[in-house]
Amino acid sequence: MTETYDVCVVGGGMAGICAAIASARNGARTVLVHDRPVLGGNASSEVRMWICGAHGPNNKETGLLEEIQLENCRRNSGLDYSIWDSVLYEKVAFCPQLTAHLNCTVHDVRTEGRRLTEVSAWQLTTYQRRTIRATHFIDCSGDSILGLLSGAKLRRGRESSEAFGEDIAPPRADLRTMGNTIVLQLRETDRPQPFTPPDWAYTFDDATHLPHRLGGGRGDNFWWLELGGLRDTLADAEAIRHDLYRTVFGVWDYMKNRAPNRGRVENWLLHNVGTIAGKRESHRYIGPHTLTQSDIRAGGCFDDIVAYGGWSMDDHHPAGLYYPGSATLFHPAPSPYGIPYRCLYSVSFDNLLCAGRNLSATHVALSSTRVMATCALLGQAAGTAAALAVRHGCDPGTVGSRHLTDLQHTLMDDDCWLPGRARPVHPLTAAARLSGPELDLESLRNGHDRPLGDAPNGIRLEPGAAVEFRWDSPRFIGAVRLVGDSNLNDRKRMASTYRIHPPAIRPPAALPRDLRIEAETSGGSRETVYRGTDLCARLLLLPVRREVRSLRLVAERGWGDGPIGIYSVDTLPDYRPKTAPPPRTTWHEVMRTIPPEDLAAPKLEGVVRGSGRGA
Image 1 (cartoon, helix red, strand yellow):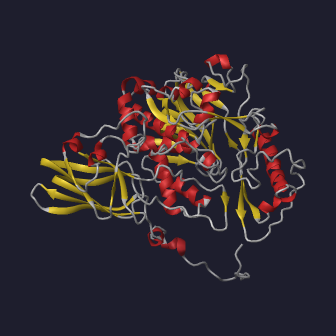
Image 2: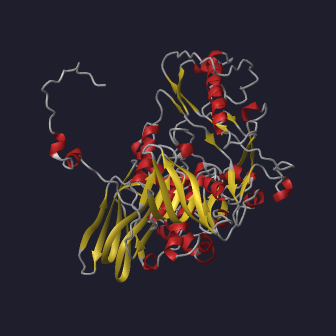
């Protein structure tokens, strides 16, 4: 089976999801190839690591990641991982121009000169071999599988301190990496819960083995259950997983049955053990620029900035749980720091991009950029760049040299913050006169869509209040672009443990929920041209599509009882929605597609009736 697309994304973790959606929404026919039955990678129900990103107030990553997490807030108050999986599935499966192949493993590539031409993949559930041809490829596999199969230049392990002038790198280069983790989750109950370990679990009988990692006895997040950095985390992945599985059950046995403070977990039970190991590091691409410790410490002031990081340089010891000292060292990093586009494509092939933890970076820099929120931003940047390469008929490198401004403006329009830059405001917006409550209305069109330092860069409207845009002469308005307050100090994480009475997750209180737009038409009449209810997105594109003298944006209700927060409002000449709501289909509509003869009752003559129980 042979298929042809503009862009092929390999790997469906958070980087791959965002790359594929960004590519498709920006006009490229895109396919996402993922080797697991669920999306999300380390964030999925198979691993269950929460999503981390930049430190500091109002530094949270937005764009597609925030869109996905807000939908999870709306639908998943109990933080159930099956619902989280369904949110990720929905965003991919119902995205126009995006095809998803799950349970599909890439095992070969073909190249012609400096170009990848196709990948071969095996789909486990259908027993089909798929040949996928594309103009551009984005490797979001984490392991750089397209580079390994094609022979692209890659890095693995730790560079020496002299190689890039990194004082926290080891004195000599080696192939050691950060290790893999199988995450366990706990659930609190109202009664004691005994635990009998399997015989094959490792026995921890010395109190010096674990107390420095247990976080006071319960251990909310078991990221430190880490092994494999002394081996090859890719080639030895199954052997590492075997050791981790024995370790996980041994650690819980120690906590429940032998730890000095085991009473702290008496009422807790083992809720979930990851089915695959979460991986931190394996192979990285070599791009036109290699991000280093010095780049991060200097704040990443790049002309070609397309994303940002802000997690500490968090370098886990390769020995992992074997190491008797601290599980990790947090080396300071500024937050935010910029990441350049030149780290997101290969020097070996002209049509191969990369995003996620396989970007072009040293081991030291990777210790900061590898967290999933940063990877999601890298994915959205790479997917947007691939779509622009398709649109302009050029390669990713040419996007950086000739269409960089287009790439950066598209990312900012799609709610990706590029620190140090303001989003261009449309002349239609700049030409309007603003009126409304006695607030800093000009902040709605200053090009900043979040608070920065002491500048709030937005307003808070009481329910029912309105802001008016008025022009000297009638103007055709296609749409209103609005960015609401989604509380960028809330990480919107999934749970690591489950208490008896956990706090419910819900959409941020100040996020706009119900909005309407009233227009004074060129003829002088006033009418409601848009009404939205139960909106749950930070970035909204609201259709108007008519000639008007003025527009009144009325904030009717937020998700809480207080004011509604709005950071920016932009009036645009056209309406080009990049999203489409997933279909709502009744079972009656499904049944009408089934031919009546396929629903005919079976003949009962000579049939021996069963017990009435299903198989």
